[in-house]
Length: 479
Ligand code: AMP
Ligand code: SF4
Image (cartoon, rainbow, N blue to C red; front, side, top):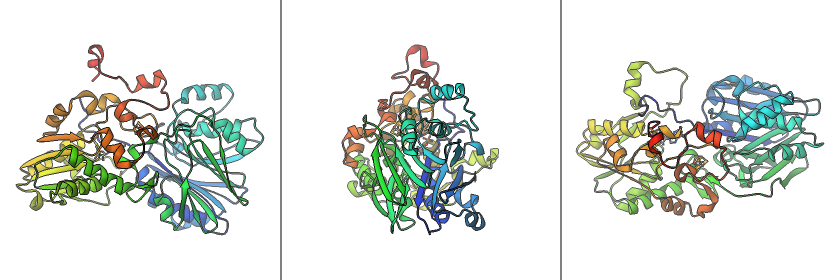
């Protein structure tokens, strides 16, 4: 029923942009992308411009693998944008890597996108009929195509015109016409931060992308806002009247880096609050609280502090494991998670462990972890998860899997517990998660937990991922 071999839960994307004449914008973008690497490890790219030509350099691989000093030295300009990608739509290929470069007889642009559109096929069919030729299968190219095909007379108007046709999640950085432009969809599903470096402006998916280059955080780009940065400074305009902030709550739970902030809240602090709430909601009789590194670290600390149970490190994590392009051999595959995590036998042996992680998606990781801990001599393993159970797929840019692969959409908590081989399993409640952030529930997308998608998902797309409230008898076989 579940794909035990597969741990392929995909990350999303990270974007960065800087307008800084006189500075080494390519190198600053390189550092920005380096700090956003956790948001995508498949490809990396930088586009630069001096207000005239646009130069793009992109390749498959990690930021540190893609660019050499020499490459960066050739990327001279006043403005730069960058992108790190893990595919959520479109296949894994160079053509789908970003920034995208598009031009018409009227304009040229480079664009980097984080998020996922839900009206791709309608737009694509229409554009193809109008004569558009696509080089990639990504929805991002469609955005660029809509902009360059717009009949509007200014770049700003063309971008607004394009955005009004888009449905779904998109945070964008665009380089065109001597300008750096940042855009966030009217729901603000994906984050985008605005910062200042001296007299220059910077945009980044997360505030850690500003910190790394010493830029000061100014504010978040607002849902439905476009900011235009050029030699005259910064200009802001709203392009939609239907604004409904719905930031992805999974950014707080798993995606964003602990040292970043969203809605003015530090991510590590929020995760610690989640751990505290979890200890109150789901106490356990244990001798030691251990995290699954690194995703469970902050929540485990919170759990330990609140419960009074000592905190310890039960695993050593190989910090240099990323996603590689080398497929593991069968032997290595059998070792599975051990490549990443190795249990500390001396710490674990004979202990009743409270094991804290941020989420369970397919259940494969947790199952392997419980097995490893028991083999290393743990007396009991109590799994505590600092988010509610994931029962619905994401259509907005996080590839958490199809519904049939989500363990909690198929099994009850008791059944999952026995699938994992754990002694107990508890999740944090909706209220616990939202209270830990301290922002009203209405300001978040929580769809992977409650199935209430803030941006309507076309039925055809829903069916492609089998979104069902409850599996019925006739569909049970699918699961
Ligand atoms: P699974 O084996 O599918 O249950 O994976 C759960 C683990 O994947 C947890 O430790 C999470 O920290 C991590 N995780 C959750 N969501 C994602 C995601 N979108 N991409 C990569 N890893 C994830
Ligand atoms: Fe985030 Fe889940 Fe909403 Fe996707 S469905 S945007 S992962 S909260």
